[in-house]
Image (cartoon, rainbow, N blue to C red; front, side):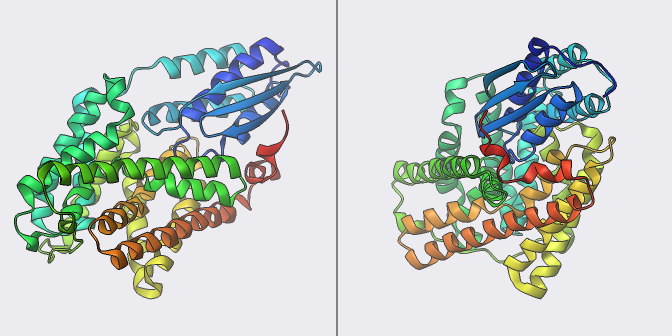
Length: 426
């Protein structure tokens, strides 16, 4: 192991702190938590088992001398501070290699937790704005969509920054942002139907809040056997989606606009094809700043974004949208797993996140709900049916990509996906 077995108190303190941090960073899925905790316990001469739900874990620890302790830890799942996930990867590598004792590992982990965000508030504001602007050409490739998103994205970014210092606002942030964006869109930007439907104009500014990644992560957890975690995350994703939907409706009611104005007609494209290239750069830069990813990873993430979009576009032409999305998810998961093996590369969560966003389908859910509210029943249910189909394609694609690359690893690595693991009694 490289160091003597740890005592029960020290091992419990470290593993509880580690599990809580992993939970807080598990917005894209909890399937790696059990493996990280189990491997760390083994490195210090103990054993650990974990029973997971998205916001809590029951952790059972046994030391080399047979002493046992069970603790419960909490951590709300999100992906806001990915600098902590980046700092955690080398620490876990040192623990597994036997390079640090448990007390030093706990001190390093405490420093990761206590570190301030890597970017000031104005860069986070810029990140959310660039995140929206980079997504806008994928919704409608028009100059009007870009212009509208610049205004609406700035409003959304200002509210995101304000919520950091206003906990009460953060609880209902998706509802508040969607309501404000809805009012401004209807009052200022929807005079000409040729510019596209109001929801299409709103979507890029709301993309930061749309839980498409949560929806896909929940389906992936269900696919790998994390039934409780996946089911709860799925319900929470739907709750976030409904908040956005209600906010859009509030904007309609406040402005006195008839519901049938929520049509879903796209404008005619007038952006050049090359506009997707700077769009990808803006999107990746926005992801780095908005989610506190260390800037040294920007180049790697940009390549993965372009690769994901390229694979999806190519295979969509060959086997339609669902097939193209499935293949892109396979390639993204496999590439992230392979790159994650290099200690100098970002952790898998960071590697997969920007590409994951390019495949996200939460916007289909919002479009489906608002289209139904506008009285366009057939079109609304078509969007919702497409949502279910593509969410499943992404989830199964990610599982296949992980399985293809994990097959070359040891049994210990592949056991992270064993369905029975999360259900072990503590």
